Image 1 (tube, one colour):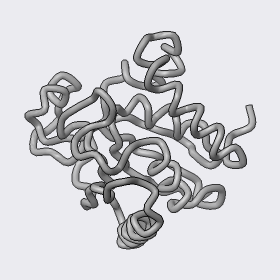
Image 2 (tube, helix red, strand yellow):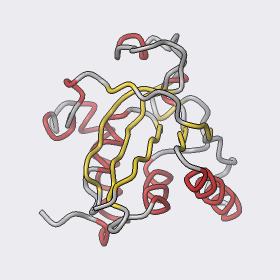
Image 3 (cartoon, helix red, strand yellow):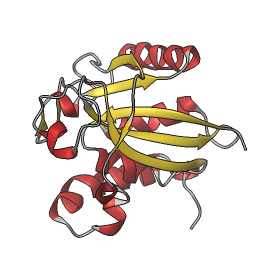
Image 4 (cartoon, one colour):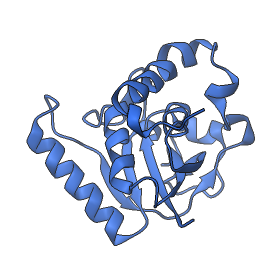
Length: 179
């Protein structure tokens, strides 16, 4: 098995983790932080908006089962890439839409996806998703691992995470893991 990593920011990492965990070929999803200046930030540090970091997920995926472009398709479906530093009620640079690429191929795939999606006029505004090379990825505290799976009845999970999970199940049915 050949795996690669994708690092994406699109609001709260609990939403992204729950969405991507459902996909065939996704080996592991780890919540964390990147894009800022503070070394080894905590959740509290990042939430205060002063570190420059975004909440991200780092997705380890099997390249024989799922392509990076497919991950980007899911990414652009489950969040609003046209709002700067906001996803729903979550506001601040830590909730920005960003793709932290690790190879030139990932950068090119992201650039192509953004061009094609903007040309399709799916949204009323242009995509503001930032493209940046991945610097340091800092894993989030273990309490964030499998957050939705462990807390499906928590109000944020019911109101925000569950609709994104349902959207993936509806629009990417053929890409779902068989349980």
